[in-house]
Image (cartoon, rainbow, N blue to C red):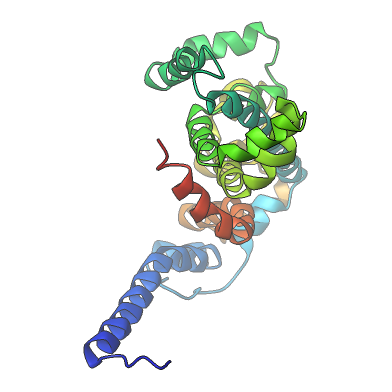
Length: 294
């Protein structure tokens, strides 16, 4: 059956396409501009000659960052943190959200535990108690200091438990009638059905771990233990001369603060930009379904 599209409807669709295309270009403009800056000379960037295309093209800003063993070490620490932090966080979030998604009749103290977790969102211990706790536990200057303190995000727990509560209860009841326990129901039924929500929670966790730099500066006693963001913040923002060798002096003549900052942004953003397209189809569904359930 062929449906005729009115002239007004066709004009509306065309307008929407044009508007969204212009909006997309507007959102991409800062990224393109920063990319052009990162490949331009320091003099051209300082003079304001760079717009959407590199001026006096060179890769000095990137070579100044990556052409050193300290950078590779910091990159490896960030990857290790990303993998460990995401896996541990997902595991803790799953096993915390599952019992909290049950009714009070199935989990007697569910409401009390739920408010206990919500309380931590409203009130925190503060920076000094946070630091002292990590220090007393002997986690300072280790990868676990970057992974364990923020391993359980209450926001992610709420998102996931709301998703669980939206799943048909008949699935759980039929599995329990067949003799399955809570762990079997969780890992064999609930988790496979929760891919959209888990992708959303995983993406939030990955972005948080990859972008974090402050805890690395505070919790790592030696610069060689810095994750990538802390390392970049040190050499680009603070210009710490400990990381500048004699062979890099010539590179410094070709860059400026703006080109270094632009290179830092793209080096830091690349892994997330690569991963996000693979999770996008789960992300939107997960954030919607996990946020509107009662």
